[in-house]
Length: 229
Image (tube, rainbow, N blue to C red; front, side, top):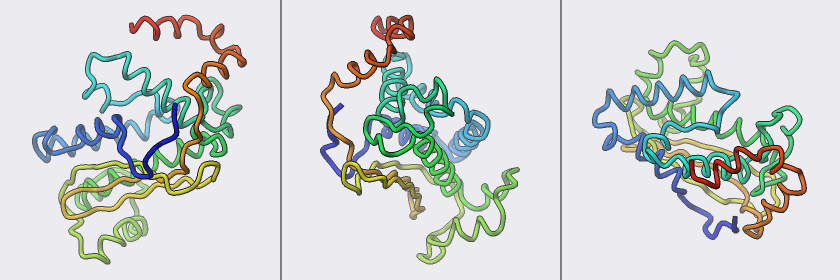
């Protein structure tokens, strides 16, 4: 892991997500809407495993299970959230990942998950969104959701593709972590704004895991990862 060189970036995972939630990849509006609805279902029903699976990565990196595992289990879990968070989400809730140890893992997960939901709502468009069977989509929510678009004269009906970005807007060590989504004429932009990641040597995570006894506790999983199975 190294310090992020750019304050504004798109990771390979974000590229996979952008591709999956694009009209070019979906082929038509109906399929893209179905992909969004399926993603909302997973957000609502898979809270305990959020961040451990990704339909976009499974589809776009098909067959490369080792790459998917590295991304989810050694990057998101490890860099973005504490690497032992899923061992005990209560005990490790306030531990941060290697990028931002000062930002609790629960907050990273909550904001990325709910920011993703917000972005999908904007991408679906008002007609599709209000047709969902979701008690949280109230009139008040819709007024707040569409306020920027209404103020700027952006059409809020019709499905749009989704584009994601990572923005380092605060110095390393800061606790700032926010998400935002805006709908434009042709795309919905979903942005995650974080502090600049702390810089560590590429072996620091190995040292920390050895100190914690992680390798002896997770030996089989680590051997499987090393063999690429």
